[in-house]
Amino acid sequence: MKAFAYVNPTSEKDAVAALKIDGVAMPIGGGQDILARMKDYITQPDRIVNVKTALESAVTPASGGLRIGAAMRMVDLAEHPDVLRLYPAIAAAAIEVGTPQIRNQATVGGNLNQRPRCWYYRNEEFVCFKKGGSTCFSPAGENQFHAIFGSGPSFIVHPSSLAVPMLAYGATFRLAGPTGERLVPAADYFTMPTLQNVRTENVLKPSELLTHVLLPAPGSQKSGHYEVRYKTSHDWPIAFATVLLTMNGPTVQAARVVMGAVAPVPWRSTAAEQALAGKAVDEQTAAAAAEAALRGARPLSQNAYKIQVAKTAVKRAILRAAGIQTV
Ligand SMILES: Cc1cc2nc3c(=O)[nH]c(=O)nc-3n(C[C@H](O)[C@H](O)[C@H](O)COP(=O)(O)OP(=O)(O)OC[C@H]3O[C@@H](n4cnc5c(N)ncnc54)[C@H](O)[C@@H]3O)c2cc1C
Image (tube, rainbow, N blue to C red):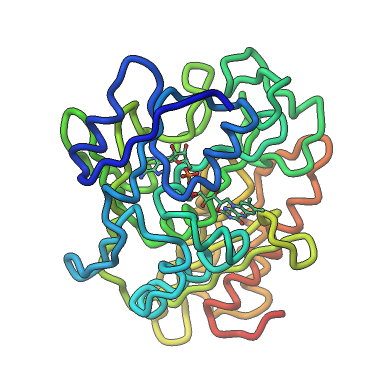
């Protein structure tokens, strides 16, 4: 690993200042992603800024909703009584992340900003778009875990499990940087790759930090979260979904359907939401909405199987949200 300086700021202001240097400075939360990248020579910062000593790690009430500090550990998020009660799909996603050891270290800010797990990106030898190269190796290569939505130029899937329910609940992210703070809806935070902007996965600027997640006041919606993995391994899901249903008696008044691990960003399906609106939820309506969610998917050479997996995740998340027993 390349030698680097390590800084322990004790305030948000000092952390932002410590990120502004001649050279590359990067924040570190639990280090579960960045340290692996440094060891693999994918990321070679000159300075690492520990944000666990600088940012909040608590959940506090805010405007009828909750404010979550970016330094909060995943295990604390998953077990927090207010998160479990008011935003159960967030707790469900958090408790599925990695292993207990990973959740004990990893932070909310780090999880949302972790870099792609694409094996070409993670291999020093492949200089792909994400590392300043001029190609994505996955379309002609091993692409069984890659995107089935979006048309490149990079075919990564977004690696954050937390990002999906955050989008579903309409979270807003507070960012702090050298020119002040800004609030960005989760729906606008994650960015699709373009040839002009392919190296990053979000709108975060250099020297900026994600400091808080702001969750709006919860409505009366019911939620379901469903992840499909190989066996019950601790690896990332193959596909998953968060569904929120606002009911009007027995029928769906409004739905929110967001899928994960299918695209370079958390992938909202308004087609699935429309397929649910005004309907009573049963196996048939859930299956029809899942069909709608995957319409337009464009698999690569080895990942067409993900279409059926994602349909299953959406269908079961809908049934879970409706309180109908699933496996
Ligand atoms: C075997 C295994 C299985 C896993 N399974 C899953 C899974 O199912 N779902 C899932 O979501 N993840 C999974 N992970 C990934 C793991 O959850 C993430 O690596 C971890 O959540 C990252 O959090 P961290 O605090 O350790 O981040 P760090 O490694 O500290 O940081 C990650 C990135 O975010 C940046 N960063 C950190 N904090 C901030 C901040 N406040 N503002 C802006 N940028 C910031 C860092 O500079 C770095 O680039 C798995 C990991 C392993 C090893």
